[in-house]
Image 1 (spheres, rainbow, N blue to C red):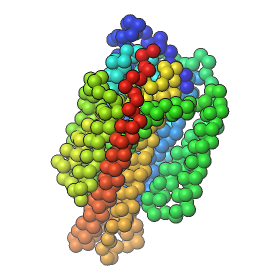
Image 2: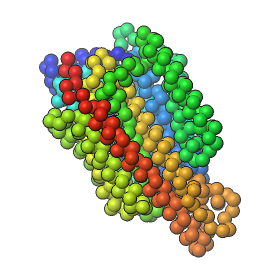
Image 3: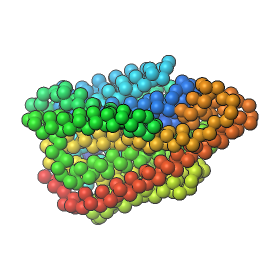
Image 4: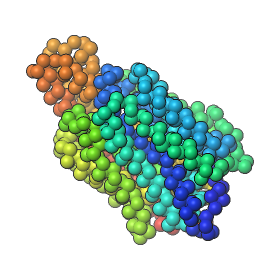
Length: 515
């Protein structure tokens, strides 16, 4: 991907952006908010979706994962289409398609139809994202202004995550589960009105050819690897997991070789030879991994185990999500005084502390305890995301900003996929292993109870008082045992991410960014 034309929005001076540029940034935040909301809003509807469709735990995970998986697989490809056909044009097409599939998901008659709608949302969501960071890199030439703009960009994801559960909970209080998908429609209407007015068309005057083979290879890398993780976690045949992982690795290898051989690669993989760039991308991925993984299990614990309404559950998490935004903005002046490897590594330790609190507790915890843990997690995610995104852009030449931004956005979505695929699958496997079913259940009731916590809660409503109490107590204990294991693994991953940041980002204090 090529550099976005820095004259697309003229700054008020050669180095400082003016009011027009900041307003353009505000409009570019709309797709960021939209994609982020759709990543988290579904978590709070999962219990009701699980009960409504009586779906399996694996299907539930695929409904969650399909959107960010397809989104991540197509981001780089859609960036290439934007270079060729126009970034604003792709943005408008993506908004229209996203609206259509949002309505389809809201009124899905079956779990399979909902899954297909989520895939469609992923396709058109990928059209919304690629130009945002690359535009920021070129519009905001001044380092301090760019840091603030990137902090706003990163905070947009956190703001969407905050609005998703809160607005989703409010809707679920009064409407059916499908109403959470209609949240996107007002944002899309506003975006379709403002984008042609304030965002000028931008395209590469000499674009590379659209590489359909690389598009297929990029998707062929991710899908098998995620499937392998899911299959392994749920105790499926080892040969199937090994085969799927091998296919994914092989496709990824061919993809990398193809990019190295092409004069106009879809993704410039040579960027990863810059240690700080690779380290920042991995930090980016792991921070979102920790955030999405936490939301996946805590939303179910608050609603199904503690009995909170969706709105109350969203309010419990609101302070932590707001702290993610605050930390992302507050770290900007701190990053001017301290080396990035110090800021990022310490930030990630906050995330490790939050998960350790839950792991050491030995159970899911009270609402107040989870609120505190999530506030601590929010500090770590918000601060590390702002600095790592700044490094992703600043450690590469300006001409590589488009490719760098596509990698950064892909890391976000891969982190979202792995957060639910890895932590969600481990949680499901632990739940199934520890669940003890009371006597007298039918085969259908036993299968439903084993598949998900939501299924067990629904089956309990069909039983007598004694059997219902036994099933609920066993299901809650099995679920919280899985949360303990999952949180412990996540805490170790965050410690590892902190060590990675301390090593890989150490040489970035004088990044070549103000050329």
